[in-house]
Length: 73
Figure 1 (cartoon, one colour):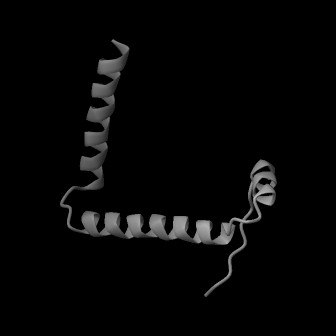
Figure 2 (tube, rainbow, N blue to C red):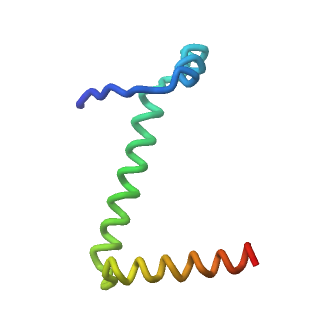
């Protein structure tokens, strides 16, 4: 297994020091693993997609306009 060093906010460090019974490295490892699995899943889905980047941008703009219309008018 490879080691990794992380920088965390001071406030988080204070909380973690209060709870030494928790295996923080295990929590971080699981969270990163779940995120990595999501990325892999998304890449598999996208690899089968026929949409171009331009198509995706156009769809995104339509969604934004629809949301704006719904919530701001």
